[in-house]
Length: 91
Image (cartoon, rainbow, N blue to C red; front, side):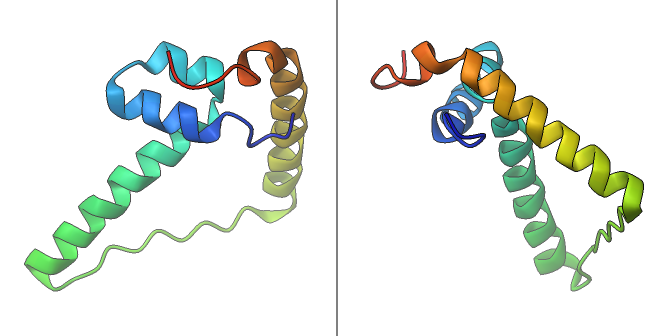
């Protein structure tokens, strides 16, 4: 299982309102869904005001290390969810 396994099912579950199942499929799906909603909000704000909000993230060395550790933890977690992720379709 890769860290992205179950990501599509997770995002679909978020938009269906089932956050618990989204978390079970892949916690990263919550972040992806939130980012999609934020991008739409940015688009709407930019279209209405003509000003485009910009978020700049500069993680630095500690940020990259934390990100790498989070991806390793996600990989380990996804391996433990292999039975769920190999089933067919959403429930």
